[in-house]
Length: 166
Image (cartoon, rainbow, N blue to C red):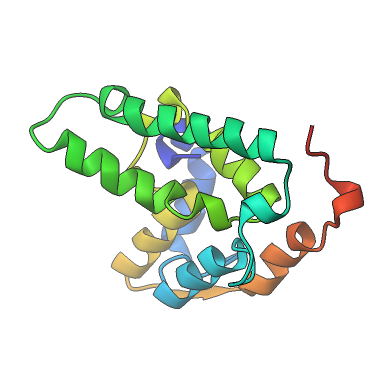
């Protein structure tokens, strides 16, 4: 969720504690490019598999149509601008460019985020990333308490009997 959706609801004493702290720890270090790459990688099927190999073809076709619809609608959802088509194409690739290689559970989360209301918030960092960037900007010591594997494994360890393709 973009930080702007929650920032006004964070108590002032929490914001003051953040500003006063010398050390700030997050779940993951979202400012680290290796972390971002590992997060993206953990969402993908093995190299020799694609989504069409593991879900019913009728569902795959519905997902493909939805992705085509989102790709078409993104420029209007994102608003006006001289480079809006380029930017919306870039945003689609960043969020869903590899959708056909995503593990089903990650694809579901991606599909849930590809809405008009979410598109209006593209480019606004989520709260953790916003706070991480602020901490770095203010010269605070930062760290992470989890590894990407700890974030990915619970979802990636779901088996087919735990997932419905209906």
